Image 1 (cartoon, rainbow, N blue to C red):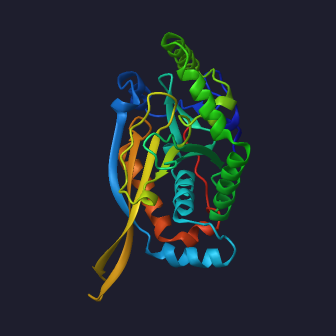
Image 2 (cartoon, rainbow, N blue to C red):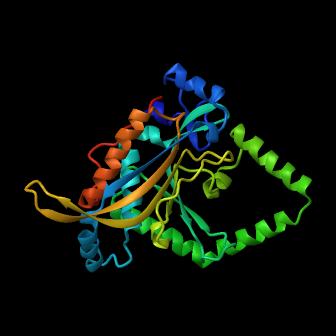
Image 3 (spheres, rainbow, N blue to C red):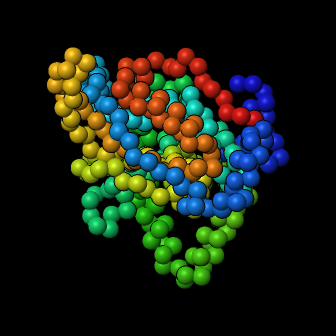
Length: 294
């Protein structure tokens, strides 16, 4: 990576570098559109996943016994960020930053109880990761989380916090948000936070639900949420006019419109759909990795 991309400057954050050469209109947008909720854009789409079923069977037979559609979805998203790095930007403190790493927050629905808190786990990837790298990193992180019972510790911390007087809790949260606004939060906190990352990805299809349009939280710096829904089968006509069955996965995306133009977002998700339709392309590193603006 060229030195100008790695050299830290005065207003850079611990988790990203400030973008200085982008359009002045984009540099101004965080000052005119103040919150992620105001800047949120969303759309629904579908990806052809017909080829994934047989491909997964071959991978499982080769030893990747627990590989699932979700692994492919995450690998396709990581590859998309390697080719469209502006999707890995975020807004903080009224400045636009390019995130140093690819940190994907995975959201689980928990036990299914009405008050279940679920579980979030953040996994770090590299732009050159293949589907095998993604599979290994996700499984390792989930196994580590189960082994050290971090979810139980988080539940105990939350239980302690909600028992404190409201003014104390509000003050503590306000301090954390102020530190985050000025880029002063410790890296160890942002790395574990479900409100900081490249994207939050949730699998609603496992609960037999369509994709859910998730909002962007005003806390933290999470520019994209991606929700994937259940698989549906559609009968279509091929080029010869013969009926054939195709499988589609619906998904919903909410993104911060301050990070990139809609045309750029559209081109990024064309790559996402391509890799879901051609999962074998994820078995090899990308031929190139694009760098974001300075």
